[in-house]
Length: 441
Ligand code: AMP
Ligand code: GLY
Image (tube, protein in one colour):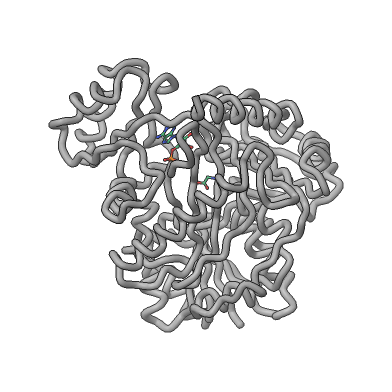
């Protein structure tokens, strides 16, 4: 079997490693905008192509006689890469363009949930022009709004009241800025609570949930600083999270099921790929923050680290539309993933800096992201650089492993020391206890 992975971040590094570990021996290939040693280690051949150029990716796939393709990032999904590969008889993990709107258009997803009366939708309005935006901001009230650009914005399209927007005027300015760029946008109620990710394998008919994970978007300790692609994440041995009730996870999964069904009705095509619900548990219950149509990064590093089944078989069955629950298993272990990122990330584009991983003890649990190799040295190229994963019976033990390892990386990088510690998790538990009480009163 010839398998193609599209993309070359830490997500694709662990995808390739997990495919390589399968007893179903296959030959692995990669197409990406840049290739680094973590990808080269696991592939027979790789090629540098613009992965938004779907014809170029197809040409490589045909040359390499690919049987199965796994699409890592969202940009090629938006360009219809899955549609094109399917037309050429290649099995694909990743939804077609119409269904990928679940991620590529925030307006599409909110309207889908409203039309199908799916719970967990905050008050919102979708704007294709400016009229009505100011009155709606005023209706939500000062401090209670979020403005979201409708489209893939690389994490820079969402501004939240009290964090990035300090008055209704400033929020309206942002709406005008988006409108000026020709973008539609969503204004919605600001939700307060704890966020979590609930990813599913979807074979077009059925969902197979993965353990729940919590990502950490803020750059600095104590959830301060700018939003990032995700500084790290953890999952618990029981596949829940310490601050969540089983009923909250159940409610989120019910929403995922309803969204899959609604999407099938609207798009009239099977969704074969990863359906990733991003949720927030609030005093009024569980709400949807957004959907993604791919594996989350860093969440995939937690999840594939405890996968306890044949990943090639899983992906093949998913892409054929015949996945069964005995093909999807995870170990009962906790995981903590921490990213080291360049000093200055995410606000400035740091100049490439070399870093060294020779002191890291378990390189098996180290994944390269925004990295290139030159003359035997690794260089951080600007985005999230390198992730380590600790795996242990408890979150606290996994955190200690991850923290010790990340401290062994030498270079001008930083990470979140607090991520996964008992103190931070304790804060999350007490916040949820407080807000659940408010909900009852
Ligand atoms: P998104 O790109 O939609 O995931 O938004 C990025 C981040 O903005 C999320 O991880 C949340 O922290 C925050 N966010 C998005 N929507 C809301 C909302 N309605 N209320 C509060 N925070 C939000
Ligand atoms: N963990 C956030 C993302 O992958 O979008």
